[in-house]
Every structure is written in C-alpha cells, then in structure tokens.
Image 1 (cartoon, rainbow, N blue to C red):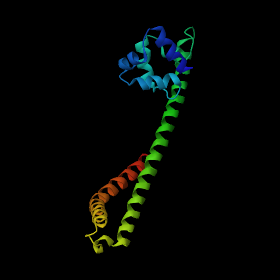
Image 2 (image 1 turned 135 degrees about the vertical axis):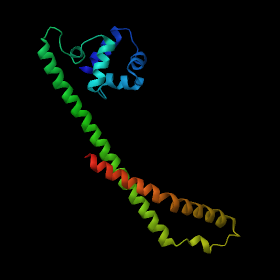
Image 3 (image 1 turned 90 degrees about the vertical axis):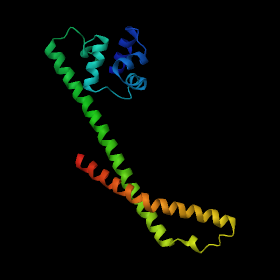
Length: 169
C-alpha cells in the first residue's frame, strides 16, 4: 500500500524517481526500492516525503483524509511501529551476518598461521637455479612476509569488531 501510494503521488506531482531522490537527499535506487516494496522509509523519511509531496503522512500510509486526527495519529503510530520493527530486525540480521563474517575471518587467519607454521618455510631449501622454483619461492616468501605482518592487525581489528557487535546486542 505504501509503495503504491509513493509511486502514485510522485507521478501525480510530475516528479521522476531521480527528482524525488534529489529532494530527499537519497539515491534514486532508494526511491525505486520503496516503490517496489523492497524496503520502507523510516519514520523521519516518511515525514520528509510527506513534506515534499505536500501530503499528510496518513495519505502516504493509505488512510483516508476524512478520518479524525486522533485516529490518524493512532493508525500512523501503529504503522510506524511496524515499520521500525521491520527495520530493526533487518539491522539485527545484518549485524549477525557481519559478526559471523568476522569470526570466519579470524578462523581463516588462525588456520593460515598454523599452515605456515607446519610448513616451516619449505621454499628455503628449494633450488633457485630452476626458474619455476625461483618464481614460486618468491611468491610464497612475499605472501608469508605480508601475511605475518598484516594478519595480526586484521585479527585484532576483527576481534574488536566481534566484541563491539556483541555489546550492541
């Protein structure tokens, strides 16, 4: 209902998605997602949309104008509550996904460290007179050198990210 109302009012005002997006300081794709029902504007954005359209928020949400103001406010607040609950659920899901990605990154770093430790730099014993061994040895040595220096920093940042994500939940 909201998606159809945004699209219909936008067209009735003679605005393109791009023009509406510029007035709302969002990208055109955001307006497109609203009109397709893939996302919904938050409560502040609904107010901004209603100001641009010069239309009450209740009209955007599908209410008729003839209803009393108290009923409008009650219905609008209920709908905004539902919208905010949906947005908070999406944020929680996104945080959970990021937390698992950070945990996976930490595990991969630990596994690579174990792998490098177990290999004990075998390329040091290679015959570098053979061109293929020289290239591979240089590649392995460069990877190991960079990994040993950069991975601990990434690991610490990932651990801090995981801790911060857990505190927000």
